[in-house]
Length: 114
Ligand code: AMP
Ligand code: ZN
Image (cartoon, rainbow, N blue to C red; front, top):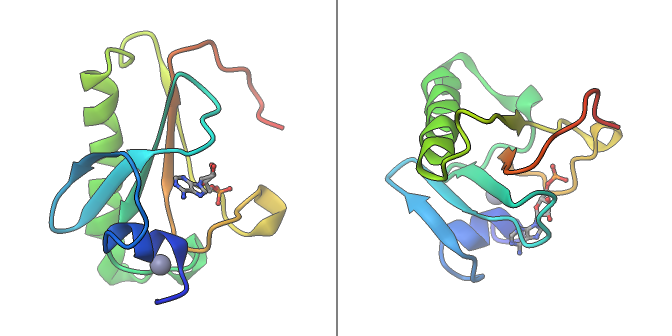
């Protein structure tokens, strides 16, 4: 989608600090980090919310989660602990309507989130 921020980052039209990319996913640093590690794992494919996933997207979601663990290991936060979050719709805090997995770590994280 031409007016979608994360589609524009995926296409290289908006700059971001890319930490990983392949034919399916792009991962980049969150512009407003909430923890020492705050990376967004984003599919190249535009999907607005988790509610819009189809059975064909199961592998895509698995890739996103697997990649978050791989980045956590690279960053040295896998053993201390990290959190992965999908916010779905406005009531849960979703502000960019192109699905993304937050990877947060590098500090103690409280539970439950607000
Ligand atoms: P959410 O609130 O779950 O939709 O998450 C959207 C995330 O995107 C927020 O954590 C923002 O800080 C982040 N964000 C917004 N604009 C940019 C950008 N241009 N580059 C990187 N991250 C961004
Ligand atoms: Zn998009």
